[in-house]
Amino acid sequence: MSCQSHEELEQFVEQARPKANQGRIADYIPALGKANPTDLSIAIEYPNGRCISAGDVERRFTLQSISKVITLALALMDNGREVVFDHVGMEPTGDPFNSIAKLETNKPAKPLNPMINAGALVVTHLIKGDSVDERLNRILSFIRELANDESIDYSKEIAQSEYDTADLNRSLSYFLKEHHHITEDVDQLIDLYTKQCAIEMNCLNLARIGMIFAEDGKDPHTQTQIMPESIARLCKTFMVTCGMYNASGEFAIKIGIPAKSGVSGGIMGSVPHRFGIGIFGPALDDVGNSIAGLELLELLSSNYKLSMF
Image (cartoon, rainbow, N blue to C red):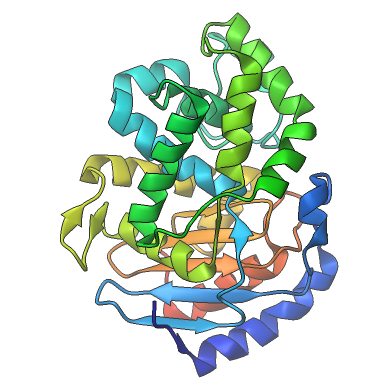
């Protein structure tokens, strides 16, 4: 993809970069701890094919929780809304993304939404296929089509590191299995989920995927409807209400666009019918969002009036 360096974006990146000193890398997943905390880059892709960028946008990083939006779209295409939302709710949560607390107190005992770990595990469980490899290949094929990049794959090192440290996600899965929201072998599900989270791409890929969601699931370059319009819109709604962990409400007020973050430091933004945004900045705030990436988005939103509200 051809993407032009943009002087104003470069200024925003340099203005936001010092914020990284207040954050920390997600080193509880050992392989993620190798990132450079001061890295910061952004790409913006428009429906007409124009792309502008700043920073080292070719640097690859893993999707982590950003993958939750994409697997939600695929699970909805596989099963329909009724089946998916029989097993996972639609409500925001004020708890951390990996919390088990609400599962124990909710009646019925199902995850509040697909953007927390418990909900994402259920969603991944619902993706059709006869094996981990078949389901992973379906996720990868979908992502490659969205990003228009057949080279996208997952990091075996990071997937293994996540699998080896996934005790809390195993606990969530066993609880969900007890309540019949998961029916497969838990280790098989964790194998698939950690590989899904370890799918790698760069800011250019991420901006393009954000642009497809911004265009209601249609690739404006090929005129292909990659996902149904209703599903793209539903995913964007979850991005607004739940996409930035338990800081989603503040994010909606300050920045006001559908977005999803991941603990690798990635942020995917979709400004409806305007453009897609891909950001990478691995130093995180206390909630788990890229601290310099959020600063960069605030600068963008105030200067370009991004808010949809």
